[in-house]
Image (tube, rainbow, N blue to C red; front, side, top):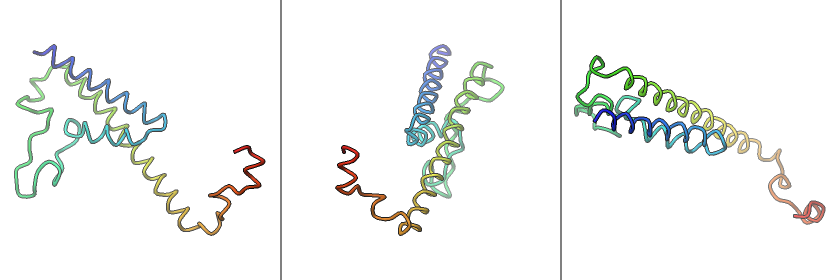
Length: 131
């Protein structure tokens, strides 16, 4: 049982690391998917997502009947490794979303300075560029 649990945790770590690396190669939405998929194992339960206000929050996914003293060192290291990749994805998602929102605000507030030709290629430019 412990071996299969360790193998499952290694697969989760590998998936989390691959999603982080894929996010670095231009797919930052994978960082958001990574955080949402593994949030129950890394972060605390969230109100309105995991439980309703006034109700008892569910136990964290990594604490289902296990105390920290009962967990082996390997399990704790695996949890720390998973937490590392999910937290990196969280930081990357916040940076990417911040840059995207900053670009939208800059473009929307200064769109008259960008001009029409910035968005559309006219016929003279098309013949020169070959597009």
